[in-house]
Amino acid sequence: MKFFRRADEMEMSINFKAMRLAYVFENAALLVWAVISQIKGYSPIIQTTIILIQNIIFFGSQLYMKRKMAKEKKDKHENKIKVLRKELGLRQEDVANRVGVTRQTIIAIENDRYDPTLELAMKLAQLLNTPVEEIFQLDK
Image 1 (cartoon, one colour):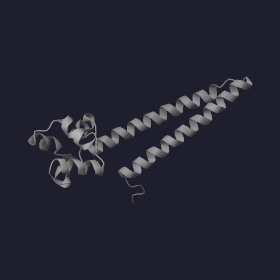
Image 2 (cartoon, helix red, strand yellow; image 1 turned 90 degrees about the vertical axis):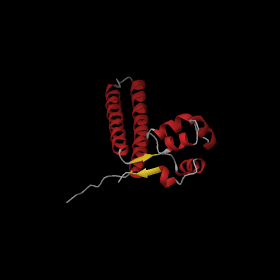
Image 3 (cartoon, one colour; image 1 turned 60 degrees about the vertical axis):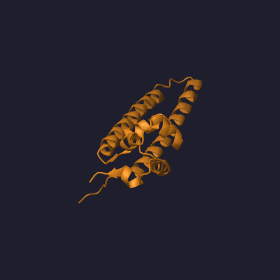
């Protein structure tokens, strides 16, 4: 019997936001505690150690989850933007200007490092005269 199911992208995003908010709140509380301890003449070694350990755990887990998500995401889909763009004789810069994003965004989409928003995907489909579902395809 399975007790835990895999979280989808939306749940992962919500978890990341909650984790960042908790991290900021806890760091702020620990810093206030350290400052008060320093003012009272106590050594803030405990607070500093807690902050250091917390930062190591937070950034380590964030790095791990980003790598894990990127690895899982890598095999899920492919897009045909680069091929369609070249067929129309457009440069990355031309596409970027026409859809209102930077050239770096187009590069990231072409290399599957960034998934465009629905609005951007529809603008790209319109520009490339191709239905969205033909540009972005899920692997089977």
